[in-house]
Image (cartoon, rainbow, N blue to C red; front, side, top):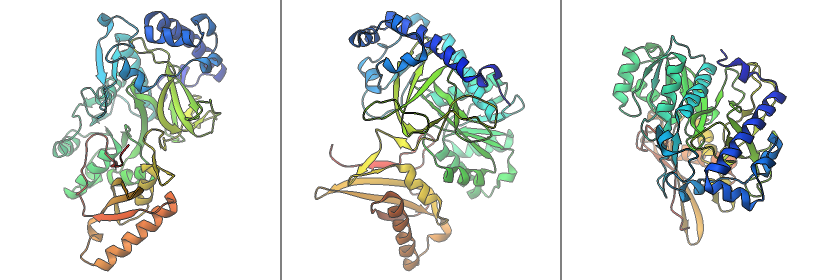
Length: 432
């Protein structure tokens, strides 16, 4: 099902023309309404009239998360405070939070792109969608909520956590679609099994999972546990929230709603714009937002873009699953390490659970890497020899994938802390 065929199947040159028009309008707005951007553009010798087409985008300066923190709380808003109808903020644990404002128009646009996203997963007004993303300042819960209501689906706004209640309502209300983080979906699947239930006891058929990186191996794990088709949704609060891009049924990447969010891929070191197919940092310019229209926002997410035709008929550019982030990439003994690489190795092994913790430290001026891994119940035995053999196999597979050795520590099932929100995968104890 295509929610907005006119936009989602638009011919590429017409899309570029539309983007150019909206980029012109956005630059005009921020130049006159946001002193920070006016100074930034003037420093580059750029005036609004200099931006004529989408090709002029690469001339514009970048925006970073630090810029939002430096202008905390409302310094980057492009509309008067009385026009702001909603405020969200990031859930970061360091520094000031990044504050995001929405006008009434922004909320309607957000609902539209989330409705498009849900339609890609086949969600209709006949569905019952259980929204187990967190509500509140986090954009996940309310973002999916408003989009689901626009589609006409019945929404269960249960938020995250309270797993026993999640399972009860899932069964009693006949939920057909689950929306939450992939790590929590995996946890719910485990809880279903531990409660003596089976996925066939439920009506679930699809899952909308995002807010954290996850691998194809974890997709297979979740689909097996819940008996569903799992879809990847992407978004970030600074750009809008969930609904920036979404997988269609072909699952060859996530279609970006580029009539609202213009994507680029850059080299994170040189900031050079890279061509389709090259791995780099994802940059977005949300051209239709009224309250917070950021200019070339550096997401720090690493991925590739593709503009080739998709079997679903949509012409929107697609982004691959993010392989990590340029700012949380771990450099250990000179080697770049992403948590998703570790997850991929563990999920290929039958004996381990998709719950792990990477602990990085420094001993005698040398980086150390420890990976704590949960073992499946049936494999966590008193046979020391068997556990040692498993530990060696994991160590070998990790080294083959990462290119460096790691200390493997096997832990009992359910000992690594679970979260209804984003899972904490890394503890870095090295002194900055």
